[in-house]
Image (tube, rainbow, N blue to C red; front, side, top):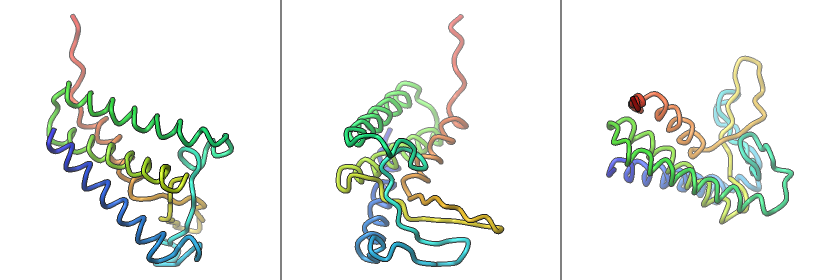
Length: 157
């Protein structure tokens, strides 16, 4: 369980440091965009009030608190699951990534009212309109890791 804690803590810290640097130090909220290595890597400020890709961003302001509660509940359930399951190192690392990323986005919703997304990647003539952040990468990698590295279910028979 120690690995879950450390992976989650470092993920959360990396996410919050990058967001602070992008939003405040680089002032991307005012600049709106900054080309780093076009078209492959750009910084494009986007405030996500909904879930993935801005889905449900039209919902009323109470949705902010619902999404915070859902993220906290999922984090608690994942923590309970890996504690009960006692999987291996990769499962614990994956859980830490997922939990750290989820908590990073929760902090954004509390501080800003929305999640600060800023990484934009495009390629091969396809212009990607969506931005994401370090927490999103961690949640995605953690979820995939939990699927791949969790031990098979035990038969009840």
